[in-house]
Length: 330
Image 1: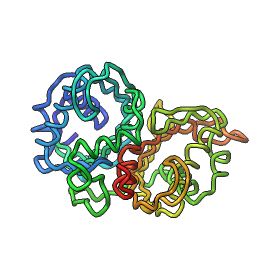
Image 2: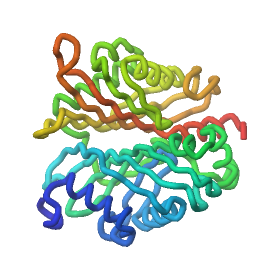
Image 3: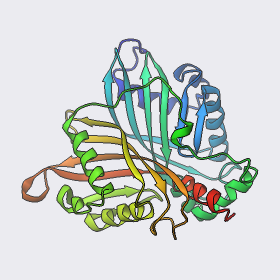
């Protein structure tokens, strides 16, 4: 790849190798080279600016979870070496809570969750990023309640007037990446499925998902078949029934020896005006940053290709934090 170290044979190889080098190899200082000095990194919990902030955040995470491991499950990507790349990198990450940090005093418990990072890269440097971890999945596996954890987080950060505010579109900055993905049919198909779901056309699940679909959602929840997928999506949409759905980026890929795959970054912006995954309606203004990966296979109805594996992430803790900051229920 032009502009990249020759030890990286392609973009997935670059993403997987530097992730292992940074985390398992404890090469935090390599972020001085791999990440741009003024990189914006958008988490649902807020915007972090600059590679030094990323280094310090990585150090804090490793101090809290010293055995933290990040396994690269897939890299779904678009772009080229001239314009630059966008990698949507899905990981399985695990650790044991033996240190003090963002998740409170050590519990001695372990967790296994997923994360997805959308990274814009050019000339061997990541310069723009969006990252979602299943924070609710960590909290639940540490024996904590996501809603109460969000309250405790607000208090630990100095109260409602001083705490870090979850990310909203008003906080965004121009990091330099302006692409929207590619025109591949599988990206279009996943974007169409998500759009129908968000327009409350839940019949799309039976129409487009394989009967044996595996669905993974926040809270480290996973299930098989149509009913699980329907329930998870209905509970999210019911909580924010009038929120505006927007697709920000979509990629589809047909790669040798792999099933067709797609990655979509999306959002819901509106009010907590319905019952569902976040309890009784509160009227809180909420922004949900979401990412979905999918794989397709040839065993749908009538032999058509159907969605066989779906991985969706958003951050329950950041949503609860927005709700509690609005209601004052602290």
